[in-house]
Amino acid sequence: MSAKVYGKPGFCIVKEIERPNRDDIEKLAEYPVALIGDGYGRRAIMDAEIKPLNPEVKLSGCAITVETHPADNLMIHAAMAIAKEGDVLVINAHGSLSNGIFGDLLCNIACRKKLGGIIMDGAVRDKAELIASGLPIFTRGINPMGGGKEGPGQVNVATSVGGVTVNPGDIVIGDADGIIVIPAAHAKIAQAGAQAKVDAEDKRMEQIKTAPLDKLNASWLVPTLIKAGVLAEGDEL
Image 1 (tube, one colour):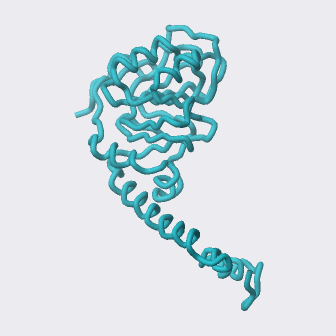
Image 2 (cartoon, rainbow, N blue to C red; image 1 turned 90 degrees about the horizontal axis):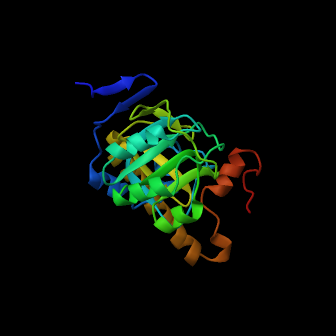
Image 3 (cartoon, one colour; image 1 turned 30 degrees about the vertical axis):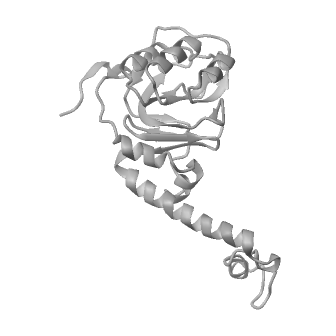
């Protein structure tokens, strides 16, 4: 049975969503975003312009999706009201930097509710206070200009954030490199792919640290250059 929708298309809230297994979120969060992405087909990674305010803080959790007018935060407040511990608000403000629609007051609510973080495809404000809070916050930009509270907007409806489709209940992981979005049903596939990349990179790193200098090249380098026509058969580097 479909979840109840409060409101109408374009101006609505879905209060109840299916959340991923917390263990799946925690296991994925053990891996760097770059290696999760490598193991997941180098896809589902958000636009690099959405950056962490504090690159030392990592983000992970269940996506609560928000679409809002670039100069309005009514539906961010609504999403905050229904969010649960560990959830991450993933906000589509259409990439606009015209208004900072998430600031210190909302940040304190998020901290009190122990949310997993905020992803803003738009702008935030109160940068110093947001960093000091310790809440993981990723944003496209900063602007001290506030916004209104009239709407419209949507909560927990599929949306696009940073060029990636995000559904409510998706797993989001963010670190200093950026953000990746993994559907809950793909959690174990993503874990296995990330672990395979970790194992391969650990092996390669050991070779880099221990091999003689004339043996540092990756085994695929010369064959690939020969296939591309850069080197001829028998050529070496």
